[in-house]
Amino acid sequence: MKVFRTSIFFVVLLLIWEGLAHANIWDQTLIPPPEAVAGFLWSGIRDHSLTSATVITMRRVLIGYAISIVAGIPLGILLARVSFFDDTMGALVTGLQALPSMCWIPFALIWFGFTDAAILFVVVMGSLVSIAVSVRDGVANLPPTYLRAARTLGTKPLAMITAVLLPASLPALLTGAKLGWAYAWRALMAGELLSASQGLGFQLTLGRDNADMSQVIGVMLIIVLIGLGTDFLVFGTLERLVRKRFGLAHN
Image 1 (cartoon, rainbow, N blue to C red):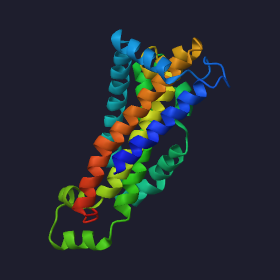
Image 2: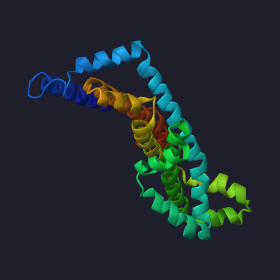
Image 3: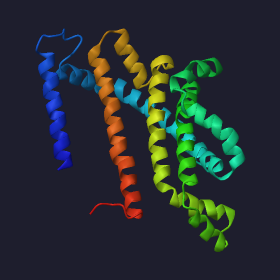
Image 4: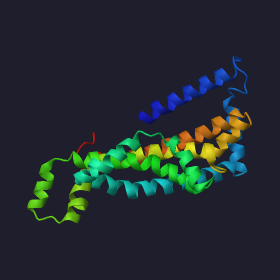
């Protein structure tokens, strides 16, 4: 039923778009019809310009996101478990979370120039802090009885993290991972729009420079589809597994 409702909704949106494009209210260079956007997408697939741009963009975001996960989870646990670090480094992390990813672009360009390293830096800085804050909050809000019971059973420090803290914090970890992905994706698009010579963000820049709204809308559709696919196939699956583990799944 959910898939049916979602499909109907997008079909209606498509029909509205088609109607507006052919109503001659605006010039079709400003609102191209769906068939013009489909033509651009098909052309980009045939000449591999869009497929290669998508692969480059996905490679960048996956590398940056992996770095953020590997660094953000231990950092969040450290902030939650050691008050000295939370009072010092935690204040810095919280402050950086309020800093938009765009602010890191001039910094990255001065340090790394117009390279992939600059874009990866922006992605990591945009994603890592949100993951660390979510993990810190999830671990810090665990019921104290979990830790007391683990200590009573003689659980060693490393096992306390791997067998108690992380499994009990799975909902918060997943929320942090999902937020981190969203911030990483947005940071990547900002970096590619301003400094990249390849990728989907660069394709958007080309569309803007050429005043080609078919290209702009087509690339935006690809970005939206990647976001929907990631949310449904990856995070949606993980959320269902976590809800089932904690007895929160609906029958």
